[in-house]
Structures are given as structure tokens and as C-alpha cells.
Length: 139
Image (cartoon, rainbow, N blue to C red; front, side):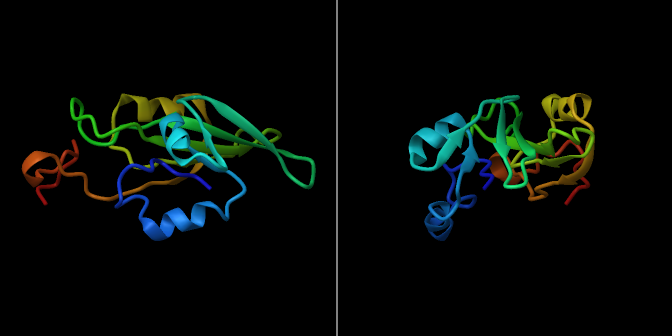
């Protein structure tokens, strides 16, 4: 299971927390793994964890940088992820996690050959409810 962060109830609510125990491993931030304990594995940005599949392939999970909100507003550590098989590194799947666009997100495309992306497209609002997107269309 991939968990961008555990410290906001709109991201991980009470029901979601009950599901964590059913996962073999919950990949999240290092801080989140410390809070959650149990089956969680904390990964810092760019750290990779290899998992062996029953078929003998190596499945790779890499934590990617993410920023939860605009620069200068500390809302806690969050993570994105890149997933791929070691024997097919040019077929990566990027899971953005709960992040805004910033330079480190662009670095993901420089480091990995992404074939599919799962983007969390919620509206990020800063103080006063103003959108923090650099591509704000006025909404």
C-alpha cells in the first residue's frame, strides 16, 4: 500500500487507518512509519525498496519528493512514488502523492522513464482559500 502521508485526516481517515493492518507493507514517509509502526516502511526521497514477487521478479518502489502546499508553508512531510520492475525499468508508473507542482516533481521525469502517471488532482488552497497552483485558471 502507498501512503503519501498519514498526518491529515482528509488523507487518512479512521476507516483508512483500519485498512492499513490488512496490507502486507505500507510504504510512507519515515515520519509516518514511526507514527504508524507495525507493517509500515518509511522511505526518504529517492530511497528504493525492492520486493520479490512470487514469480521471482523484483518489484521496485522508490519514494519521490513531494511538497504538501506552497513553498514556505510547512504542512508536514509527504511523498510520491515511482513503481517499476527491475527487469523493465523503462516502464515506470509515477504516483504523485499529495503534492503541488515544484522543481523536484520535474526531477522525477529526469530520473525515471515514466509510462503512466497517477496524479492526485485536488485543489490546494493556501491561507484565505486562494489556490496555490501556478496554473490557476481563476477558479
